[in-house]
Structures are given as C-alpha cells and as structure tokens.
Amino acid sequence: MSNLEKHPVEVVEVSEPSDGVTVLEPRDVPLGGPRAMNVRRTLPQRSRSLIGGWCFVDHYGPDLVSAGPGMVVPPHPHTGLQTVSWLFAGVIDHRDSVGSHAPVRPGELNLMTAGSGISHSEVSTRDTTILHGAQLWVALPDSARHGSPAFENYVPEPFVLGDATVRVFIGELAGRASTATVFSRLLGAQVDLPAGTSVTFDVDPGFEHGVLVDAGDVTVEGMPVPLSHLGYVPLGRSTVTISTGGLPATVLLLGGEPLGERIVMWWNFIGRTHDEIVEYRDAWQHDVIAGGNPNGRFGAVAYDGRALPAPELPVNVRLSPRG
Ligand code: MN
Image (tube, rainbow, N blue to C red; front, side, top):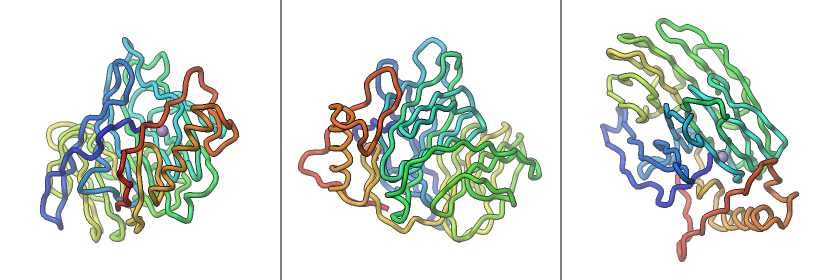
C-alpha cells in the first residue's frame, strides 16, 4: 500500500495511565484516486511511532467494492521496511520489481522486504466483492535495511488455544512459530474469539504489544478497545489477556522488542536522515517516473499503467528522526 497522507499525524491519542493499556485512535486516510478507498490508520501517530519494529498500521473494510474499482495502487517504491499484507476478505493481485506476481488471500501472509529498494503494485481482483484487511509495515533495523529486496508467502496453520483460534504469521506465540523472514524480534498473529470469552497469552516481557480490533467488542487487560483502534500494551508484561463481550471478535496481536533506533519515515520510504530520503525520492523520480533507469534502485513492475509519482518534499523543513 502507498502512503498518500498529506498531513500525517493529525490525531492525538487518548491517553491512559502509562503502566496500563493505551488506546490509540485511528484517523481516516484516503488512498487516493477517484472513489478512493479509505483506510483507518493507528500507527504512526504523534504520540507513538513504533511498537517493536511495527511502524505502520492501516485497517480497511469490510468495503463493498463490486460496484467500484476497489483497491488500485499503481507501482510505488519502498525502502528500509517490510510490508505485511493480511486480508480478512477479498483478493489482491501483487506484482513487484523482483518479479513476483502473487495473489494476497485471506489468512495468508504476503511479506515483502524492501531492503535497499523495491517497487510494487496492489490491485484487488475483479471478482472481489468485499475487501477487508490490514496493511502493516515493519521498520528494518540498520543492519538489514541495505539488504536485497525479497517477497515471500506464508500460510499459518490455525490452532485452538482455549476458546481462541490463532494464526501466527510472524514470530512465535503459544509454542507455534512462523517461518516468515524478519530482522528483529517480532510477533504478528490473528486471534478469533467467540462472544463472552477470554484468552490469556504468555508473551515476552521484552516485547511491547498492540492489539488491533478488527471486529467485536474487545477489552485488552480490562481496557475497552473500540473497532479499528489499537490497544497498546507496554513492555514488561508476561501475559496479555483479550476478552470479548456480546459479539465474536477478531483482532491482530502485534508485538516486538523495541527497535531502539530512530527512523525517518516519509511517504513510502524509511531512512535515517533527511538526505537519505531525498536520495530515495530523486532515484524514484528520475529512474522510474521519468524513465531514466529501469535497472535502478527500484527496478520495474510489470503493470499496465503509470507509476505513482512521489509527492513534493516539504519546503524549508528537514525531516527529523522519530522513535
Ligand atoms: Mn506499498
């Protein structure tokens, strides 16, 4: 997914006691284009840039897309991050500059590692009627961010833990581990719970966690977390308890060891300095948008249409690191 937000970080979190669960509010962000899809973004925001290495959390749908174009995101670049595409309904056709052409299906992880540079397109398929999912990004640590781009698909086997059905797509939870390639200690799992039930996970106290509520009336550690909100659970907990009220629930449990690095995130790029971001932007504009070098940093995507030009950088402002 491409970040088209013009004025990022407009909404301030609802603060709760610092040792408890903090509820991060989503803001609506249009993906651009005519009849654009809206996504609900909970990360980054003013009060929080990262949860472990997780640096971007968009939630969208369920949207009826059979009458419109659905999701149409033309080729656009990434650096220094991994994109995690996770669907609840619908199918997205993914193409990238390392030659991948793959469907993103519900319950399947599609993980794209940008490393030093990749480009990709994402278009919902013609037979998709309902589109519903999450687009997540992971910031690569400095040791991995100049590496080679890559793409992989991983299908977690669902398992039952008490009342919960769990799919671990990144990292390890309840003794089940994903084989997906990550470069810092991370967790990503879908948890489905019937109405009126509760599940307690043993978690790494060295992780911070976020619970994104996709459906249902959910409390995390006793704190109500509304739909499309992200319940932030700070470091130092050895368990995380998720409970439901009168409706069945679906959540994504995200976690990770704090990245411990300050990042610069602008448009679809992650770097460490303003000047790096300028270099990435110039490469995209020169090599791809102006057609100057199809073998450049971002390669080329087999796509019928134009690539997305980068927005202008803010004038007279140097981007500063966060995190
Ligand atoms: Mn993208």
